[in-house]
Image (cartoon, rainbow, N blue to C red; front, side, top):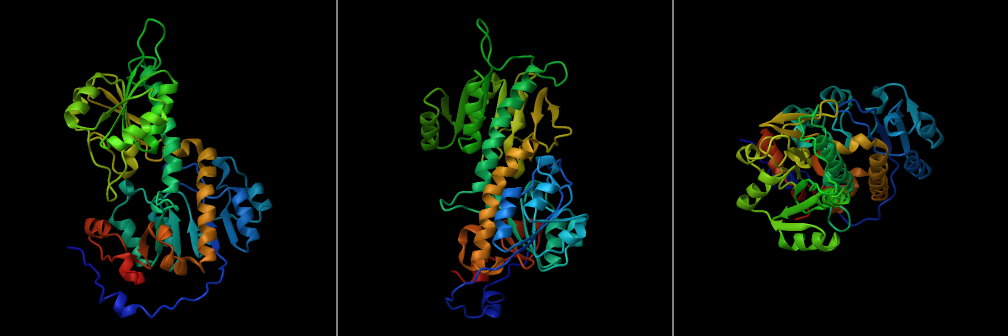
Length: 403
């Protein structure tokens, strides 16, 4: 059993009285390393964002070559005011470490401890050793995909979901057409006069699902979008000018739709850190051979029982005759576009942290940023993580005295 750290053991025992005081802007020391894992081509800050932050008094170090795969050269970052360093050691010594993918265990070992980590969490790829290593270093860690905007939505997830949705439709069309090498049907998604278009089923009416549906419609496919919320279905239908069919997500209806589907795109949002599985292996077995499944939700566990994480190097596998595409960081394939979208979100967040007196001070009053907090000075702040990985945890409201 995990040890739940109670109010008496944390908040009452360690918290001093906090009076309302005027905060003073803090200068952040930010390190951005080169990404080495999972074919990651993105970088959190563009040269333009770096220039804005440097002019505000922040110090930024970037590992040599960190932006190359996104189309941003070392010279561009140097001209923006960043310091270019030749190895990761100096980067992982910075007070704030900002990267796209979660750090590896080797990278965590380079951290001096007591720092702030800002990155994606990608829970499906994490294990107990990851959280234990960060906890031992007393790290404060923020999951970028959980940080909220003023409308209580994940701004980063929205941006990456829009990209992933578009990509899913296009990749699905390519896999479906390529019957020779990818086990697809050799079928054109839009059809031609006298030949019916492909049937595309999109599961989930959020940003990613809507983006995928829009892209598939644009290629001429026959599209059905399914979601448990009638309100959301109505909104998608209106947004796409009623060119799409919508149905309530129910097992019987879903199973019938899958049996006729050429492409199925799973785009459900996570619930308490994990995407619900709505497509069983039996349902996949009923799909026609050469059909294609794309699981956008794989970052949070996936919504197909047959989903297994793949990579950009080997993006597909065949299960029960159905082609599966389950790459968790789809947006990294378009590193330039995705990096700009990420920077548009991360740079203002860093400025807010600085304006709030620094990372630690900002977490006391900025609930939107604190929504992304999963480790505070080495202590897990999410119950589901503590219970799943058998590690001590506490509620962030207790830690910051905001109950």
